[in-house]
Image (cartoon, rainbow, N blue to C red; front, side, top):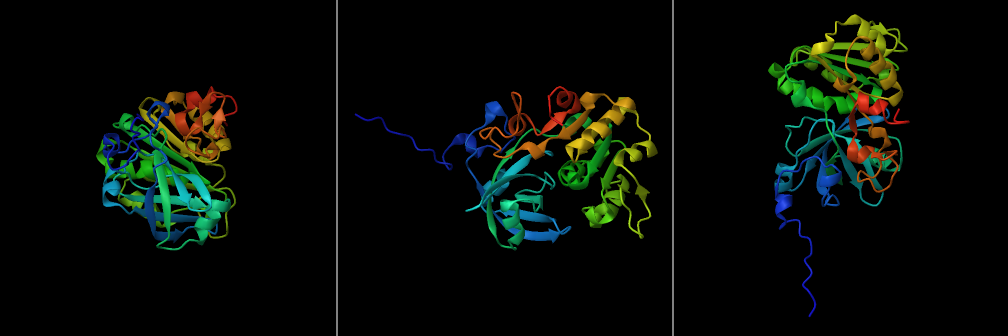
Length: 302
């Protein structure tokens, strides 16, 4: 007599009725489940970047979907494939996910042709996250270069929405030129509503630029850092990590209180394709958020 085979049913599994949390190697389960989502808003940022707001369609799934600042989702475009994208919205926005997407390949190219109302799949959230709880009661340095401001928005929102829990907050943002700076329409809001001290710099100024000129490390010379009471989050091109984090080390900030994201190395999000492995470490499973001490001990991580 043949044994009865139990077929997985997303609506009947007790584990799937619990809030969705971040996945680590030992906690990955049913990650092939995709949330159906609809693009509800598209905000052009530059010629290459757009901000997409997506709404999970199913009310129950919308309520269960939670994430932590620094995590990512796999965006599935039916018929074309999927890509890992860091979540760029507030963790408190239930079922609404904002993703800043740069046109850089087949899937992202298709997304840039999509309009409001288009439907995609979301898998996740995946990955480690920035330790916002650990940072409470301390000063926070948020440092971004170029597109790195996108994953930095989630911890920034988390801080602003819980502003009394944090001390002085500095946001340092650098780009190649003014046209490459993202989310300019929010700067004043971050300053006034969030009480965030915003510092901007470009490498190549245009005639109307009146701010700082140079590399982002120059901004570190403009602020006072108390290394015993400060945490840092650094997002941007990996080449930037070495210069910024080394300078923070020189200023006395411990490496275990600097956090970076190595999201650029990810591909499948499940540790199956082996494209993101650094030795025995898989960025999508063990990261993408690492403290800088760990990064320095990962050969060829940056």
